[in-house]
Image 1 (cartoon, rainbow, N blue to C red):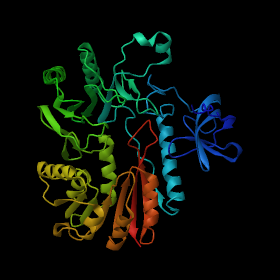
Image 2: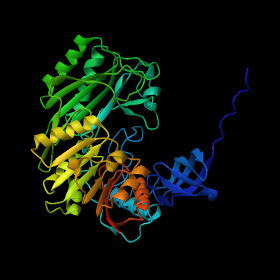
Image 3: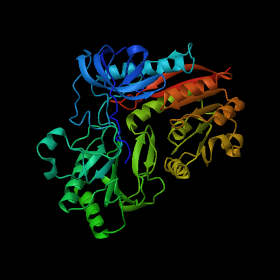
Length: 471
């Protein structure tokens, strides 16, 4: 037999003052020359910190005890706060969230982008800080998370199935959610109806350790037009009669649901990108209004999850673009074409390029549905497309880039520099990689203005728009 493992040594630092807050939303303490990033800690608070993870030069921790709390801290509005993995900034008033997010973008641009002469415009906050999301993904579980109170009362006798979100920091534990404040109704009503009906029928829910269970996940999409899409993910293709009963329940009880779809996922992971989507009821899209556009959103379409704020974000891009009707615009990482189509009415022509073929199909569909003829879309790797654009692309006067969180590949940066486009408008959901790319482009482009746009209230996440001009 091997030697018994020694219990892991607990490192705790007592009476630490939080001196700052970093861009991932953690409070910063500096005990004994160490930098620790601490969850749920605000500047000025005095806390005892338990170290949970160490890295070279820094570490992470959680608050064991608060000795002094910040006067700006407020009571979270959701009863699931602290256990649920989402909405981690509920203890901050929304105006303070905006203040911190603006500070994040400014400091990141200064430290990583080495930008010191750019015009920083005030953050564009949301008109509402709740029920702003148009898409939520729920997981079914056969062993939902039990609270300490439930365990004390005899948790073994409770219904263990549930539908909800991952517990903070746990991929294998799901918190059963009664009410989520992120999405408009009837989202909660739909989820509860499906949960109650399927438990009443004693249907099996998914278990990630055994990889079994019939019901795996549920995706609900809503539009500002009031339309709703429901997609149910099953672990196998059996029980087709029961499956139809679930679809009938949704269709009859919720008239706003215009699209019901399903996916069969028998794999070990929850990624849905490669699985076929089957239409069960209605049509395979909902319509989202964005400015003068009617955009068709399909089950796998990527669209900004805050639709109302997306329109305001695109309005910033359009304002900065200042198009006269003659310019040629290239939209890199165009997705379903939302920015390209938003700008097309003021441009001479717009070319969009995107690696995902299904997204380009959606872009062409939305161009036809909105009767916009002066756009062209291509499927391809952006760095390759920049080297060999189609004839329809023309010569760009303006480049709009909205890359994934990892930002621009160095080859794309090099290709952009070689193009010598007069202006670039760079939209990013990750200011850190955006600042890195701005620095990489600095030899040829100078940043002139930057504006944070908040798309995700109650979280530390922030969108950033920056304009660059050829030197």
